[in-house]
Image 1 (cartoon, rainbow, N blue to C red):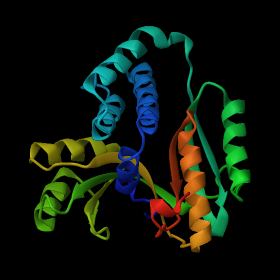
Image 2 (image 1 turned 90 degrees about the horizontal axis):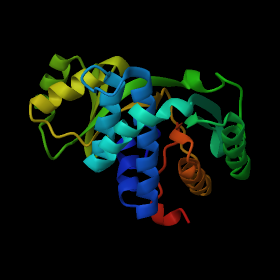
Image 3 (image 1 turned 120 degrees about the horizontal axis):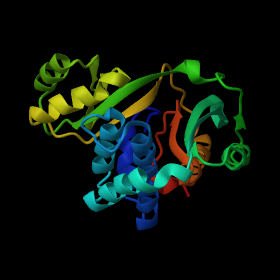
Length: 248
């Protein structure tokens, strides 16, 4: 599990408990709510909402939940003001972390995030301390078993993708500019390409591979960060080679 392989992160979440899945649905519901508040309830004219709905479907969020989130946001979100917060810092083994949150209480969220960095041997840093190590990109995952690389490359590049990565054993990763993610995703689907996931991601320029003990600590820290209600995304530049069964 490298720092930018979102498909493996999603795959892990799908295999976790119902409580963990409900937590994922809550986070996506919050993204939908913010998108509706910023751009309205029509996904045809609100690209951010369209992307959030696609993310919801990729995570098997029921259509009823999606509709309910949109309706609730349309009528009841006036008194809730979520703020985008980004925290940067370091984990064990010289790893770099970016944590994105949507919160209605900055002090609570900052305290929770700082506590977990401290607990697992890391430290929060100043804004900008590690973000220069990452590039924001759209990443679309497609199973290698579903399509030939040449066909995917033709469809993706015609749709405006920047690159196709095939380093992962199971998936191709189609890389786009963040603003082009929705367009490329829609074009691939029109051409019958089955997508595993499609999200904006932070891709590390360089990765580091900590030792096994440090990887175990990092996995625990990542899980605990992702369990926080306010945290939406956790990005890092660690290459994780141990399995989940070694995490506990």
